[in-house]
Image (cartoon, rainbow, N blue to C red):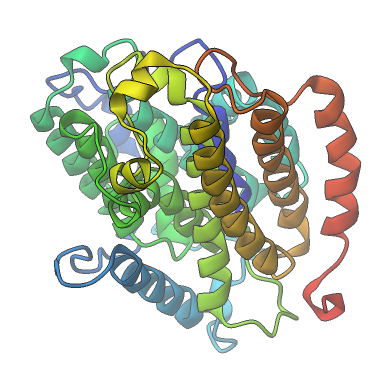
Length: 391
């Protein structure tokens, strides 16, 4: 549940775009600089995840959790001393470190521009983890902008296929540009599985073809694709506290829960905005049980039925935030503060929806600057509590 989960928080907070970073429809040509970079093959892609229709979405997603946890657990073995992140990285001598450092610096500049609070939090991390988090952030933002950015109307499934091919290439040490180069190096250094990245692209595919979700099982899978994946990408970088007695799987479940909670909060905050685009991300069966329909959402009237429905949706989102809290203390000490800040700040959006009398049709729930600043010391205080001190 790493601070990179702020990716999902920050992607839509800034009206500017990273269109210049996103791939064009035909895919960018590989610049010459990449021929000077050499990377080890990094983490291998683990086989497909979401396939068996008889299982629930949570069961399918848990398979990804187990695979990533196993990969991290293997890399945490004490006898593997070469994986000490404080030691210099051994290379074959062909890596151009000037270009690689420039690639990481550019990723940091993107974070500083589009996610200021998150960027400040990353400065508390070790340099290695900080740069890796920047690289993951930039990839996630570029991926999101394929379907939500200025050129979204021109993006096709084939364009996403090409983006996924680029992902495979960078995992195999063949980056296309400097941003890919930074991520390519990151995944060769940290035990980050490729599957969550592929699943995020699958979430973008869903946005191209799907605008309704029949039940929460379907919606849960979508939330995993577009937000829960970020936690699975980032926990290997953020690190688990050496003194933690928690299982690796439980830490990843907490990371997943924070991603789900953040995305559910996004959905509840943006009901009116999504409706104006013809989209309804609320479970259709639960709307029907509440006596509501898409027409009620498009009409945008706050009624007693709507308030009652929203109370149930907010309760569910808070439940996922509660699950997420259980794993934050098990992260490495330098990573806990930005994660707590993410959790506490984003959770307050649900309070803002309630303060707006559940009018998420015409009013946008947000956390004011004063509340944000007040939350940071509280987050820092919680970050000081490590796993050995938690009840």
